[in-house]
Amino acid sequence: MSPTKTIKVGSLFMGGDWPVSVQTMWKDPLPAFSGSDDPRLASIIERIANLQKLGCQIIRFAVPDMSAVESLGLVADLSPIPVVADIHFDWRIALRCMDFPIAKIRINPGNIGAEWKVREVATKAMDKGIPIRVGINGGSLPKDLAQEPDIVEAALAAAEREIEVLESMRFGDIVISLKMNEPDEVVRANEEFASRYPYPLHLGVTEAGPLVAGVVRNTAALVPLLKKGIGATIRVSLSDSMEQEVLAGKEILGCAGKSLRGVRIVSCPRCGRASFDTHAFTSRWMHRFYATDADITIAIMGCVVNGPGEARHADLGITGAGNSALIFRDGKIIRRIDVCDADKAFQEELDKLIEEKAK
Image (cartoon, rainbow, N blue to C red; front, side, top):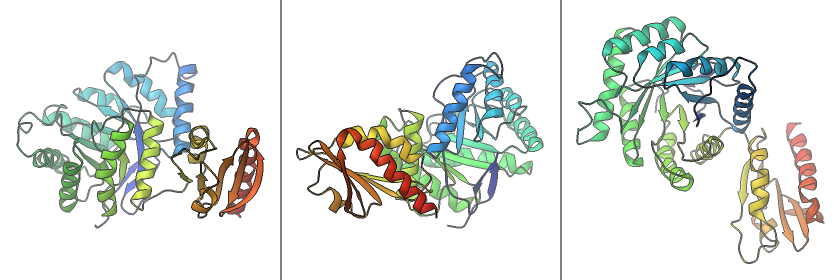
């Protein structure tokens, strides 16, 4: 697949030969902040910074009304990653958002309204140098397309209408998303679009469901597309936390051979032989691992029967036997400690490994 146009989204470049980026969407309404020193604002910025450490590169916020715009403006001014404003129904909200350091505006052709409203948004976006994502959603298509028998063709038609309007204004900073609930429809829509247009695609499955179902649906849709070079950015939509969306996104990129730098975690599912609580250890360490910017593999194994041998490809691993924990490197046991000291000892060995890799 030929590279798409390159679009600048705040400090991030999207499309072209740039790596595929991972994004998420803020899950809660923004409060009305008392000012830039509001502790609630500080808490939000801290969480965004933690999401960035896990691998999130863009974050999107719903902006349902004018009162939310001021709050989003404060967030955008302090956020360590680009902030996208998600607009539905009222084009005037999009116009107001662009008075703040918003990195991208998302509009939905199914509810933004008349063409002249899109033109007003595009005029100001062009003046401000802000790209527009045309977000096509299978559940909210324009009224005249909503009853079309083929949802993929309807979604493509909706995208083409908006592109024609924007191109007529010589507006080219366009990102497109074509989201549906069925993975095969997502694949078909994005493959067809990529064969027609040079614009970067935001990939995702809408209303994908809770953690397990959502990850499966997104993997089924996104991996085939990414392997074909289709997709500039992804959001794994889940009925779960933003952190889980980011981690799922990173793993999907890894499955597609598009992985970013970072730790790869392998762990056994645990069975009746287990003498080491892999679930608890993984839960305690998972966010620390994903926030580590080092290309290493970590193994968390439940017992010594197969642990070090099965995970000999790992740079560093841990397992247990009775009251002891065993730390191994490249399949060879290097430390045997009391299980109570496992976390401290593992941190020491992880720090050594990261330092060696950095040389």
